[in-house]
Image 1 (cartoon, protein in one colour):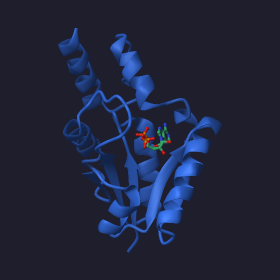
Image 2 (tube, rainbow, N blue to C red; image 1 turned 90 degrees about the vertical axis):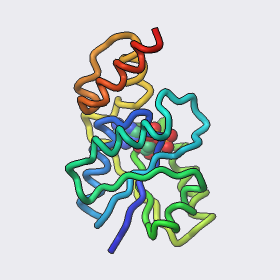
Image 3 (cartoon, rainbow, N blue to C red; image 1 turned 45 degrees about the vertical axis):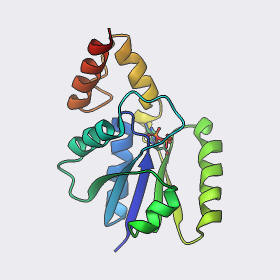
Image 4 (cartoon, rainbow, N blue to C red; image 1 turned 120 degrees about the vertical axis):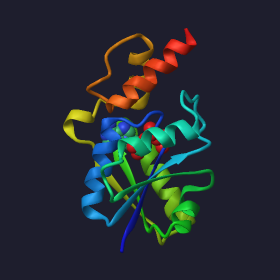
Amino acid sequence: MTIALYPGTFDPVTNGHLDTAMRASRLFDTVVMAVFDLPNKNLLFSTAEREELLREATRDTPRIRVMSYSMLTVQFAREIGANVIVRGLRAASDFENEFQMAQINQTIDPGIEVVVFMASRQYTFLSSSTVREIAYLGGDVSGLVPAHIVTALEQKFTRRT
Ligand code: ADP
């Protein structure tokens, strides 16, 4: 049985992330989407919120599981018995970072293979930061994220203003 770990910040999860996870779940028995607890980024949603939003988004997909973690990604992969790490690539601008990370992970643990999915055409422009920015400015993000995330973003920004 192959378990694939799909790690990310997921702040919040978008239809692009979900598309990648669905495609990965056709290749691997189980895909664990794991929310990284401590990214070096300014976060809108807490780890618990990001995890809960992700759980709701993947409720009807039994091959996709949701967890969170706060250690090295390869270490976490080992801990859950995953020998594949899934990542997504949207444009050349993603490449440098993904390439570097894959090589570092490979150096730390050569037994774990990094599999990169090319973003589907309709999601190449889509990022969590774009979604946050549009929502912050009161724009419509309903085609970009699941409905419950539209609501969560509205609540977040209403509370802040
Ligand atoms: P991270 O902080 O780990 O980059 P993200 O949540 O931004 O976390 O992204 C997780 C992974 O998903 C990354 O490999 C990223 O390139 C990929 N990704 C992000 N948006 C999309 C998208 N629209 N389509 C495909 N892959 C994506």
